[in-house]
Length: 324
Image (cartoon, rainbow, N blue to C red; front, top):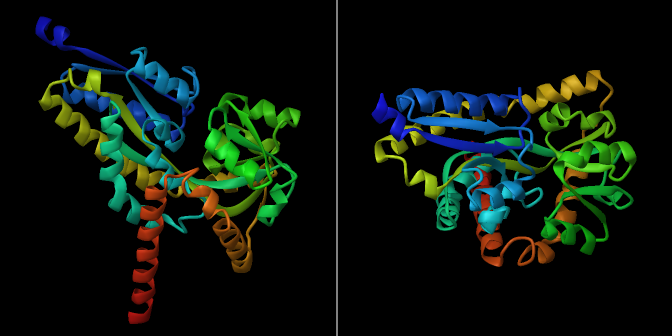
């Protein structure tokens, strides 16, 4: 028992996900299975709901050793490896088939970049599709021009992208979004239906445009300084468990947004499903932003790699349709 106590490693993990959600349950299960598989040598302490601060705060606190791990979205991951922004180019994906294709092509590259900056990736998971929630109905992208659009505080790339395109961006910490809507400081946000429901944002932003604006992807990462103190045997067990849980979570949550939309509709959310022509309008409009996105929002190299891979998939899909 003395030996087990001496080897015990307490991992403090922070996340924005609220307590009681499926995402939080995934992390709780992760900790339970790690503890069991390592005979109590690994203990995971979870700090949910943004109690540690925004994702940028989490990165900073990991760097100074106050916490050791985080379950964070592409917003925080891009602080560690800017190449992650390739996954959040607006309207780059039509569906999860597209997402799986790009992740298969790029995950090892992204993980290597994150590792080089001091962190180990334990699992990838999709949070869901970001859709537009607004206080008044919108149909076209130009309808957002008179809106006050939420952007993450400190995310100057996204803020500048909107402002250069003639839109109004309002940087806020995620914990201030609800009060921002209630006071009229913001009246538009691109977020997942599940998150809009869990945070009750839809009560004020009660119109949703059902278009897949972008993918919110996430990862569980751990500081290499604490990771390297864990035995190789336990590292293998922990990674295996994390990957298993990530796959199970993915299969479950990829369909939960639709359930969240139905619940919100029962409580007054109005959903607009754009026509094929309206969706094409959004895509074509976004392509006029590509000169601004390439090199400013996403590096030229990553932009070219991502758009190249997606063009390759489009070609394969077209050939498949012809053969069928």
